[in-house]
Image (tube, rainbow, N blue to C red; front, side, top):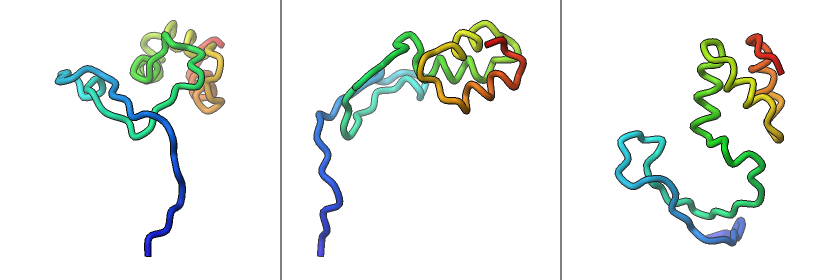
Length: 86
């Protein structure tokens, strides 16, 4: 017997760059995609991850990231724990 667990609404959407060399930039199609709020559009997932990884070598981008509205407390703590001035 098949049991229906949930129904999701929205429109599938393709994002990214087709055939990009970098796997993080390649195109993919989401199952359901709906942007509700994007308070920091200049901060892509890739840029934020790079700032977090390079926070000791390059503290300025990490400090900018730490000031973003909506950043999780976990990320703020990790940034602050490495001597980044918030």
